[in-house]
Length: 230
Image (spheres, rainbow, N blue to C red):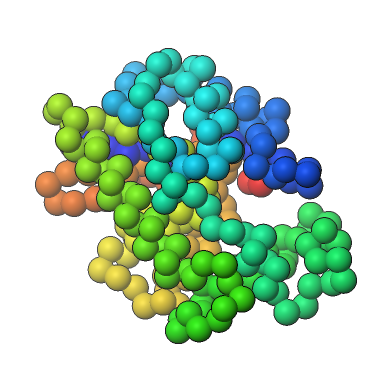
């Protein structure tokens, strides 16, 4: 048996000039996870991260506690362009997303991502990437990580650092591996995506019968102060 641990990045910097930078809490979340995995006896054969700065910084924080592990980059684990998707919302106020407070941004974000995921014929040119293309690359990224884990001697552990969107695709696909219709996939994806905790772990078991979702959104390494969703 091999295992892929898919980790959501630490808290980013909502409202800052550069969202892609980890906050101080985000760095602490990554360090706590690394120390927790090390104390649990986890010895990964590799860490694979997306290409975003928050992925890189989370991996760096994680390795402070986990120790030296080879790191690779797979940009298929990158988050979708959430600002581009939100910008396609038909009722944005003058000033765009910059005019929204946190609560209003969350409402618009949920509405926008739902429209994006349900654009079944993918005919809209307003979105920077279609949901179908995003889901396909997320599946390809998981397949590559699973292959890397199974190729390790006696099966190994690969840690992936990604974002809530790709993790939502992974979880939705594994819950319904026979292939749901678009509306069902979109609903499952939304449910998983919106509750992902920063630095939480989703475990994928890889064996002779294929890939199975073992756990979703583990975050026992975080106390209440460090438990964040954005």
